[in-house]
Image (spheres, rainbow, N blue to C red):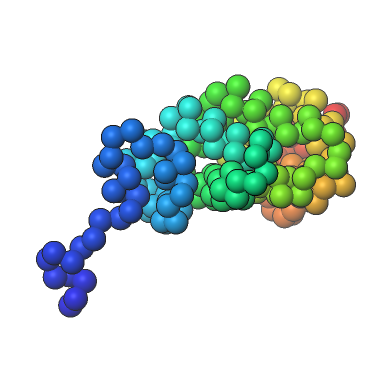
Length: 192
């Protein structure tokens, strides 16, 4: 078979970037294969992506508006790809985010913006928080319990569809059998 013949196995473009000295997150985000490499849990890529500084930069692409609106990569490609990286559900990246209170504050800082939120930015935020709620529900609910003001901030932006979806997941209305709707959290939400 053609693909098993030696000499025809081309290295991944992501691997080629990782082989270079001094590569940046932007170099990786520019590469179309980054999502596939995340999903296949490329060890070298995951090691880079789970670094605190990398997770912080991914979050900044998600929630900070670009300074130069004329830069299509900064305005569209990097936020979209950063969102997709989080939605690949890489355990190490989630752990870095959830174990660092400053990174969680950065993620939730989008809720400090005045209404209405940018639908694009809110959509990315909603996908990331929704994925976190789905895969790391106890950790996220515990974080919300420690920071009850976030529930109020979510409610302030309920007119944004992505935020409304997050609220539905938090209260367990998304799925009746949702693991989020545990008794301890139901009681806490009722009191909030």
